[in-house]
Length: 421
Image (cartoon, rainbow, N blue to C red; front, side, top):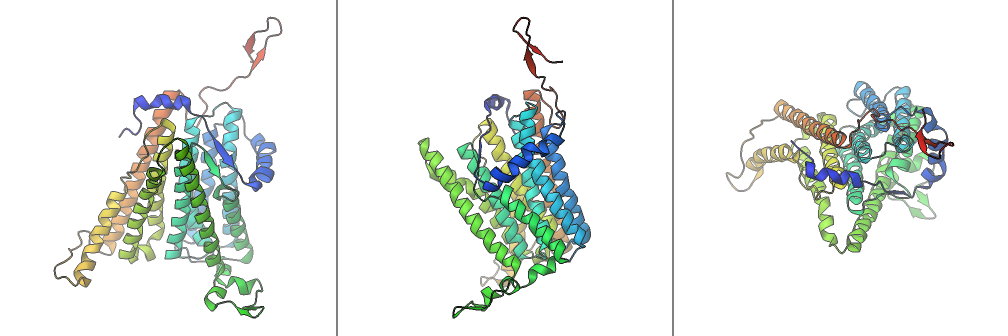
């Protein structure tokens, strides 16, 4: 399948990266650290995309330790596992942050770098949600699903914002900076406390806040909320604020060009449509939710990564907004197939419903893994096709530098510029 037509490729020559980062932590702490220390550790011969991919490998290693020690997301791990998760995520953040600086150092900045960076970030999101769920002993539950939904929505909305405004905007508190640093702290503290069970106690009581304050009694349900539940409340507040701010950015950008904003807001529809099917499928197939949530979460992550990849590609080559995601087809079939037997059993209308073509139990598990395999194939073909197309057109390589930058200096004898050997 061809994802980018040849007549669209000249738009790559007009590419210009634009971003705004309002984070104070990034401005005063991280960026000086990256610029003055970290970037000097990488040779000029190392391609920026290779730095990005290397950083992602730390997260992959973390995920593999999760599969070995806590595949059900509800068991305490050795302390060193949590420490390794903290170190791996911090290294991922660091490598991901300096790839742009490396691109400028080596004169390799271009559209492929943005596409590659966003693609890796999209894959990292679902993996990191599972690692976080394991660090909280969330288990294979609706809490884990809710966390996955919030994280993927944040990334989708951020990319949707960039597509319409042509600028990547990061708020004063954002996921790539403060969000990751909070997770690093959570992982490290989990290791220090000896396991994820620590987070399952009531937070207010654990920090010494009494239930009665100044004659007012905190409701029992609120007072007994554990650390994980309070973290989810905080995440919900940040999600709502960031989503509203992104929507305002898009509306302002559309109105500035004289376009109607409601058409842009429809771009959020594909995400919520896909997630309507995801929630319906898990509700209809509780065996997948309780017993095979990890592979299903990987599938959901690939669905989102494909949508995000399409948006970034459309942004780079100036295509219309991509509303269609082929990966929802098997998901929709799974929902319809699972709904039939439920209607046959509970519908007040006789004969309303249909038998399942897939069956139940092990057959549904097999179908879920088929969906995951299909998603890997579709997303993999998309990534390979787009990368190869861009590399061929721009005459570059993806993970190595094809045309190393050679600084020029002025020849004192005749005032002409010559390449430095």
